[in-house]
Amino acid sequence: MSAGQEGGPVLPDPLAARPIPGWKGTAFLKAIVDDPRVEVGEYSYYDDSRGPEHFLARCVRYHFPFVGDRLVIGRFTAIAQGVQFIMNGANHPMDGLSTFPFAMFGFGPGPQAEGPAGPLGPHKGDTVIGSDVWIGREAVIMPGVRVGDGAIVGAHAVVARDVPPYGVAVGNPARVVKHRFDAATIARLLAIRWWDWPADVIARHVDLVRGRDVDALAAVGGTA
Image (cartoon, rainbow, N blue to C red):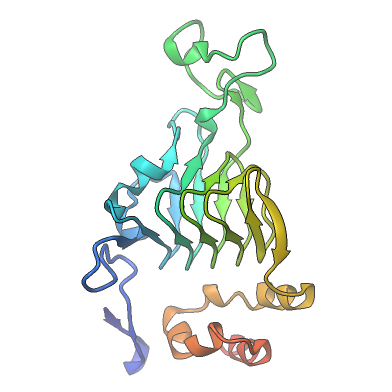
């Protein structure tokens, strides 16, 4: 824990590998991610009773350095046990007679991405998870998917298409079944972007962040 600015509230350490006293199953991702191709915002966490320190090995799959894609996760995002981020290295070429990844094993040119459809198949770009996202247990996020701020992905969902901000996506293939708020409220929340405020400001106004009064939250945002 660390003190806030000018004697403000005590704040959790965003680099704490064990931020919940007495529980070893949750870690802030910034404390355990050491791959420069994975960008993680403060206070986003992974929960896994088997040991959250294995997040990269267990959850970020087929993330080969020669492909060049990134996994980007915003702030205050919650990731449950067994979530799988399938990266572009999992793709196989589909525009020829065979889908076998010959280049990976030294048949012909070396294993390298060559644009939208290199030897490893289609390259769909970076996978981007917004801030204040909740991803349920054993959900699968396919290559190049973007999950918007405030969205929820249900347990065991297989997400192959983008999820809009504050959308709720469930099922296989995942589909957006509803939005958490009406369109006007979503627009205001995306303008307020409370997750970008300094941590001490969030701590002082956490009741508003988890409440329902958008006007009050917006008033704080004007001074944050």
